Structure formats: structure tokens, C-alpha cells
Length: 167
Image 1: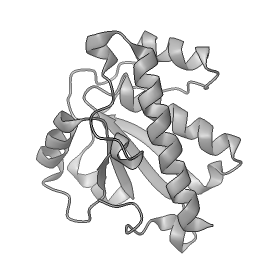
Image 2 (image 1 turned 180 degrees about the horizontal axis):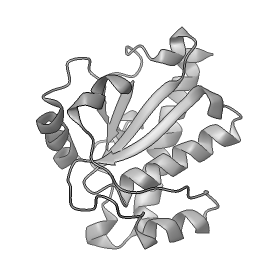
Image 3 (image 1 turned 90 degrees about the vertical axis):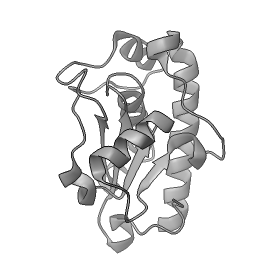
């Protein structure tokens, strides 16, 4: 999927609608949601974006963001909003312009849940930043610093690409 080719609602005077996805929706996707919200807020463009996050699994449904995610975001001054983990559903595919996932496992989960990606909306976060590979998963590593670096790089690149398209 190429962001440069994909039409988003903001091109038509609406909002960019972005859903970040990871396995449980308590670490990486919530971090990406709050980082992206902070980036657009600092740019004075919150009104142009709808941003949310979801999981591919049911394991953490209803749980708040991981304490490590909250701690890292507070450390770097990114506001943490109210959030409870939820799973993406097939029926919401059309609600999003971009569905941004964190790793290859998420890609497989999205294909299973969504039944494919006919509009080419699903994209790996680090590919937007021109990097191969997955966003570091702090669930296994405990390294929220590495996750934050990956998430920030991907979200900054995403914002830059979307800004170029609507400038």
C-alpha cells in the first residue's frame, strides 16, 4: 500500500481517518495513537484527523494501556487519553482511510479478521518511515524506549506524507 496513491477523506475536505493496530491494543497501537494525536495537536491540525487504535486479538479487551506505555509517554510529554483495548471488526474496514499495523503477525491477523484488504488501506508503520521490519514489541522485550523510537519515526513520517498530500 502506498500512502501517496491512496485517497483519504481529507483530500475531499473531510478528516484523515487512521486506525493503529497491534496484537493486544495496550502497548504499541495505543502508543502510536497517542503519539499521532500529539503530533497533529502540536501542528494545530487535530480537526483534520480521527485517530484510534485496536487489537487483532481478544486477549486484552477492556484493559487500559500498559503501565510501561503510559510511563514512557508521560516521560516524553505525550498526553495519554482514556483508552480501553478493543478488537478491530470486519465491519469497520470502510470507516478508516488507513489501518496501520505494527508487525507481520498483525498483518496476518488483519487479513483474517477483515477478509483481505481490497482497498489497499493496510500498511506497516515502519514501512511509512522507509524502514523494513517490525515496531519493537515491549510486551516481550520490556523496552518501551525502543518502541517509542519506532513509533515516533513512523508517526512523524506518516504525518509528513499526509501533510504533503493536503498542502
